[in-house]
Amino acid sequence: MLNPQWLRTFTTLAEVRHFTRSADRLGLTQAAVSQHVRHLEAELGPLLIRRPRQLELTPAGEALLAYAQEVAAAEQRLRLQLSESDAEHGEISLISPGSIGLVLYPALLDIQQASPGLSVRHRFAPDREVVDAILGNRYELGLTSSKPDDPRLTARLFAEEPLELVVPAGYEAHAWADLVRLGFIDHPDGQAMAGRLLSRRFPGHPGIRSLPMRGFSNQVGLILEPVARGLGFTVLPRYARQAFARQEAISVIECGRPVVDKLWLIHRAEWPLSSRARQVAETLAARLQRLAP
Image (cartoon, rainbow, N blue to C red; front, side):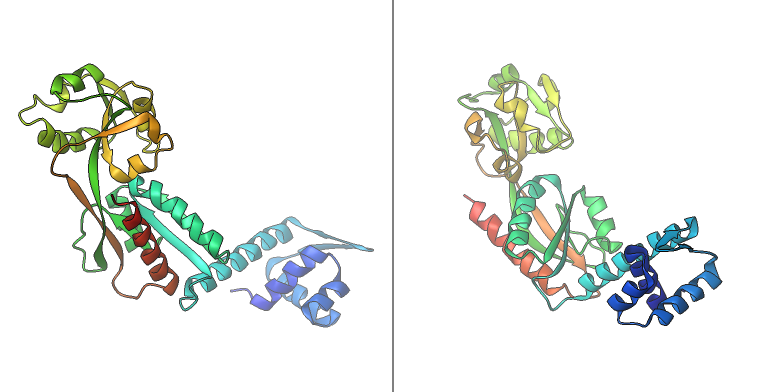
């Protein structure tokens, strides 16, 4: 492993391109700076082309500079991750299903604006990928629609997400024939969600596959766009509907007793959450409670 002080010296020299000024910036003597460079060149070969009043990096020097910058960035990430007692500095990492993510991501940005020392990293993903990401320590917090039974994970109920029948604004859906006339806008979970919900509103219906399919989108933020344009209806979780910008262009049809999915907050069980993750989880849960009707 290369000496970290030598790397810092070389990085500064590559930026300043002057031995004396580099020494001043680092609080070292010029002889110490030269010695650090000689140690590196003894291991890696020529790193600098020395000309009067000019220093130029060799290809090996450019490669070492890129490596040193990666090491510095990795050290900074490590410091952020280990600063557990600081709720206002460090990284917030969350991976969640798309529907809830449409609501949570803007809320995360609100938190970051209030505490600029925080860095937000959020990813939309299905349940299996969420679990894998938490187990692989790529994210600190995750949300899943089913409670995992892996002993390496801690899971607690975070929110409930009712399904909703969404139609164009002003459209009445009193009978199955009304849905047939309108047609279905499908999405990756659309038929499964519609089957669960519509059996409450239209018991004995002939099945989702009997409906005309008017469109499909795998982007949760776009599923309601064709509905808003009068091209069909769909069934979505409430948070996806609430995140849609043009609420005046859509309507929700009452379907009786709600069909509700549970959302579970998960993280590794072997170590505690950082203070910033705990605070963010509480803030997000409160935001969702305010959205509930």
